[in-house]
Length: 441
Image (cartoon, rainbow, N blue to C red; front, side, top):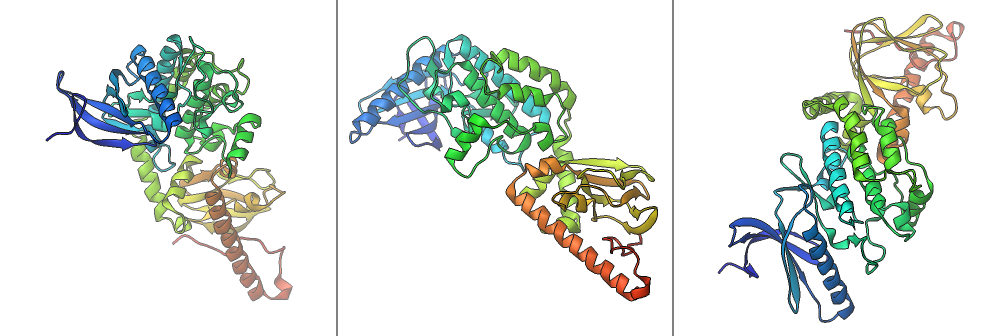
């Protein structure tokens, strides 16, 4: 016999949370598939049961008022003695949290399109007097056409009523400064959370990270966000001011509504349309994985490298690094050869899989270039954004420091051996890092 919830025939379980189970079911009257959220009340905890009933009634009443293509529709609801259930639109898709990891990021133009639609959905909710208060990746579903559906308005605040029955709601990493401080909320708190989500979808990390919740709260309230374009140099520069405005701590400087946020996003969306981005990312990943330099890197670290680097196709006789300049640029030769020289004298040639420019990056205080690096033939160069690496994951920074240090020591050892063969009278200079000739085959 088919299990039923009310008149709805249960097909299978879609998910379980702390207080509810969501089922895929069939509505016998319309023969359509629906999602049924079932909440059971516990007789052992009367206070919790009262709170769940209130949450349920709020989600039902608010959900029925919201009619937007990017908000999950509420069809039906019922409250019984020991349980309640909410019947909603079934979205055949996946939660947006699936695309927040550095190795699963969506192409940039798709991210902008999704967040653009979320802006309009939140604008609609605001015009109905509703603030969601818990915008996060798990509460946004994505279908096969990249249409987002915002769900879980159970914690929503009705701005038309003095509704304060839930305190401290929200997910800390996505909470606005005013939400953390327990100040009165309006639509701008949802836009802040959406800005955090946009930052994460573009970079694979949250704008603020900390080892404890107290430290995270401090950063959200007091610290400025890092540049999204520094973390991902492939992004158009126009995104930085947009995300900065969405994440303004000062409410008066933040976006006033979702429509304003969406309008600014539309100005940069055309700059990043690339249907082949995913295939290109996979190709780049495979090329990095084949290089000896990256042999010890984890896959997720290689994906992070792709987000903080720029692939440069450089003609022959082009100077990649100039002696005497001050910068921390370094990178890996993916294909081709370069010549390293000091004061016009050739020191060595480096080829595929070799790193160049690492000494200025490793030095704690002096970024002055001691050598010049010039391409000998058309070269594919992976330029690492050192500022983005500084803001990257602890694991990636540690991996790079370990590999670069090992590389520098190996080159120093080879240089010392070469100098030893010359004998004391022939010692010239202070022992460079590239005194070993690496001629192309």
